[in-house]
Amino acid sequence: MENIQRFDFLVIGGGAAGLTFALEAAAHGSVAVLFKRSPEESSTAWAQGGIAAVSADDDDSSLHAQDTHIAGAGLCNPQIVDIVVREGPQRVQDLVTRGAQFDHQGTNFALHREGGHSRRRILHAGDSTGREVQRALLAAAKANSAIQFFAHTLAIDLITSQKLNQAENQPNLILGAYVLGQDGQVGTFLAEKVLVASGGAGKVYLYTSNPDVATGDGIAMCFRAGCAVANMEFFQFHPTCLYHPQAKSFLISEALRGEGAKLKRINGDCFMQRYDSRAELAPRDIVARAIDNEMKTHGEDHVLLDLSHRGEPFVKEHFPQIYSRCRELGINPGTQPIPVVPAAHYCCGGVVSDEHGRTSIQNLYVAGECSCTGLHGANRLASNSLLETLVFGHRAAQDAIKTRGARKLECTPPPWERGCATMSNEQVLVSHTWEELRRAMWNYVGIVRSDKRLELALRRANLIAREVHDYYWNYIVDRDLLELRNITLVAQLVIHSALRRRESRGLHFTTDYPETKEAYACDTVLDAKEWYHYARTLAGY
Ligand code: FAD
Ligand code: SIN
Image (cartoon, rainbow, N blue to C red):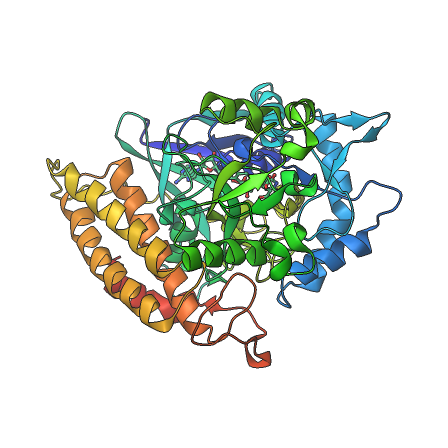
């Protein structure tokens, strides 16, 4: 990898948010897009159910907004919700113009329904919507000569003017990032405008629906650079991931429940009506907690999701990916129920950003799952995430284009310092610690929490942070170590935020404070200034 590379725009992450930004920025300058692994690997590519956007005659943006607020349990930012539901349909049209193909019924979009939605409004491409979105955006970006792809290239840390020891009273400005190339060398990427669109952090939990790239790198990098992070306690658990020893991270879309699938115990008992009058179509937090409770009460390791009453042809036609994956594993969802369990799915918290995706660092933007715009509040409404990536990928690009040249710092940061780090021959330490942290998060910071469990988790996470810190400074960095460093910090942020919220709301449920309290009707913001010294002490930077 070349030591220093310069671009007009640097995009860290090439899912729906990053590629949307890149395609718009490319008309105004050179763009580098970094992908941690292959360009096809992202949560975007794995999305199943679809994109929530108003298109039917019986629907309107105020209903979409209302459903978003109900799911968000009082914490959605009304201005942001309004922006997303109003601008969303146009962003979907942009996607269609860029080549994405969604299922149609006649001349209209075919629409699915999902939990928490009062109308059918989920447009989709079979049950592989994300694959189609990623395909279309990648094809458009590859065809654009202003965009350069860097696959298997991992951003390590952001470079800011304050890190270069600029006076504290000067505004902090982004300059670029240190980046680990495929050849194992660390280079410097510089750009006037930087977008972090690195996706979610599901890998912080042992069981997750997320792909391996979802290690919260962007959240950790931005926090280390001085950005505030909010609402990290609101980690969404998807109620239905396939329960099978060979099925790592395979989701069974919520759209099945939208088409009438019933949740049952192993003995066939339907239980959702006992928890909520909306039964299987209640918002995700309620459904996931109900399943968790049934499993714990009866000592069962999974529940069942049954759509077999719709018949095999229907299941095969509407959910071809799910049908064929289940068949490969010996389950026929057209004739028998599917074994399912909840798993970590979506990080509602993230880097605090405004209505243009701007962060507190000048010229640094965030978009997509790593951001906290205020859309999701305490619980994300199904299929609102892809919509958010499109709306904020676009808004951030527009702002970045409009404000180019307003404030620039012409300087060359020092190269990455390897110091006296040596090669590690103890990779087992990294893999063991990785497993230990994720298991602690699953056991103590899961669907149902308590102060005692959170404190246990925090003690472990803090110990691990110290070990990772030593390891980070003593050994030459590789991808596993860098990801471990990031998920450790993300775990600390999740636990701290959860300990601060002494109530139950949305995705955060604690047996110590089971009620929702008016005093906590606000975001949990971990302010970088307040937390920086704390984080330095624990994680050592
Ligand atoms: P991603 O699409 O995850 O892209 C992240 C990018 O960042 C990747 O290119 C990755 O390589 C790169 N990256 C990460 N770290 C680094 C680093 N350090 N350096 C360089 N690059 C980096 N939402 C919906 O709205 N509807 C759905 O139907 C739906 N279904 C889902 C199904 C599954 C199984 C999953 C996991 C999620 C689903 N979601 C769904 C959520 C949604 O897919 C994601 O929230 C959304 O796609 C995130 O997009 P993004 O652009 O922010 O990040
Ligand atoms: C699903 O298809 O169930 C996932 C939808 C989402 O996460 O929004």
